Picture 1 (cartoon, rainbow over the protein chains, first blue to last red):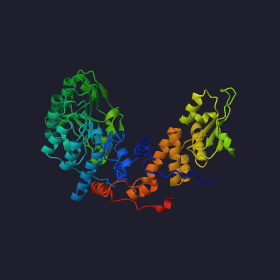
Picture 2: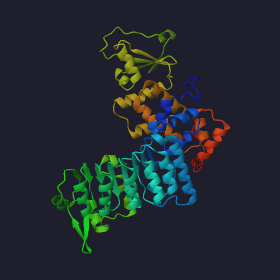
Picture 3: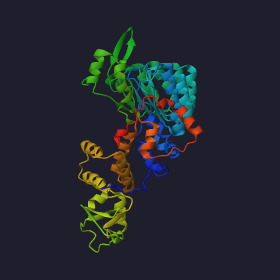
Length: 298
Length: 176
């Protein structure tokens, strides 16, 4: 049977805005960018706010090598800058959640390009590798003054970053550390993020003193995720490990603790044998993505 | 399951029977072919359901001028599977294998007109998959869209989008 709808030639206004947006929700970043240059109607639809609430750079729709320090070279690095600029020219003010690519090496130019164009960002998931200057961090965190939630990684695990957060970001309520959590982190977040409600430090080495300080001082804390953590302190040159019971004995706190079954948890058993709360990069991507607290998983 | 009807059937026929009886519903395609379906199928087609609700179930023949007799059987097949709870990955893979690009677009518009959420979501993904990693020119041809940017605008976009032009699949004309 022949289709007799001869008038159905997809002229530019035939595919309505809502229909296009529905199709576009299934596209990756690169294909969405290409859709924006098909025609003017498509260009308008490709800027629909609903498409840009989350910009996940792990969903580029391009071949990024699955190894750390990816796109380290100048040419590739420039390509990343172009991607960030173009994506934010389409999504910019509508982007409320930014998830960096796990593998791509982050530069000042990348960070500043995207930060200056996403003024309404509420949550950022930082990448694992890169090199960011103090000025780069300052500019980014100043642009993201309204940010509420950050996943911190080893490359941002420094005083410059924490100070900039303290200086510019007064609305932080949620933090996830995908890196060691030492006493100075505890002091920084107690000072800089007094309204913190959610904290996740899963799968890493956590300082007992730091943890006690946080639980004692951050009065708005509602939930702390300590799954697969190794709580420890350096005492007279050797590590003293602690259990959750030790923690409860030391601090009187009312917030909810999310913990794994310490003694029967396979991950914890393996970790104690292998990495003592310092996971290797090969195992880090899952740790970076997962979280028992839903708002911190991606 | 289709039967030819005379052109005066275009007007609505109003059933006098008790609305709660499970009389079949007649869906009339744009080219005047009648498809008799179970009333439960309307639950999948929001547009049809609201049509029935508005007339207290008295109308059982529903004209669908925007949908051809070529496309309607596909839509009905999908909806029947959906009601039976038998939409599986395998079924969807088989279903889409039967469709060329033009049919996918037609069905998408039909699903949009009838407001069938599951079919729309499924076909959105199918279309997205078919234009993924293709060139802008391919997408324009696929949808029959005329480029309405000025040469200056086009040049500027090409410059900004230089990063998308590496690693694009060669246009696959054989797909159709």
